Image 1: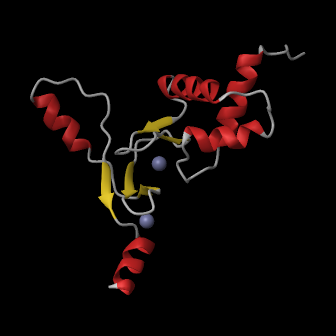
Image 2: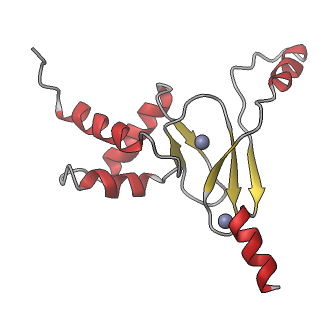
Length: 134
Ligand SMILES: [Zn+2]
Ligand SMILES: [Zn+2]
C-alpha cells in the first residue's frame, strides 16, 4: 500500500511533473501558474524553493539568463542553449557537447564536473522578422 506523502513532497511532485515534456524552458512564475490550478494553496516561494532543490538533486536543470529570471528544464542530459535577446525564449541547441573543453581544463589541473554554454542573439523567427522590417 502506498503511504500518504507529506504535503511538501506532494507539491514537489506536482512541480516536477508540471515540467515534464516541456521544451519551452519556463520560469518559476510560469510553473507556479500551472501548478496552482491543481494546488490552489501553493505559494511562489514554495515553487522557487522546490525548483532549487530539484536542480540540486540533478532532477532538473536550472539555466540563468541575462537580466531575467532563471529558466527550468526537465532535460537533464548535458546540452547547450540559445537565448533570444528579442523574444527571450530559450531554445535547446542540437550540437555535440564539446567534451574536449573539459579535458583541456583537466590538463590545467581543474577537476571539471560539467560545463554549460548559452548562445545569445536572435532566434530564427526574430531574425526573420528583423530582416523583414528593415
Ligand atoms: Zn526570438
Ligand atoms: Zn534545454
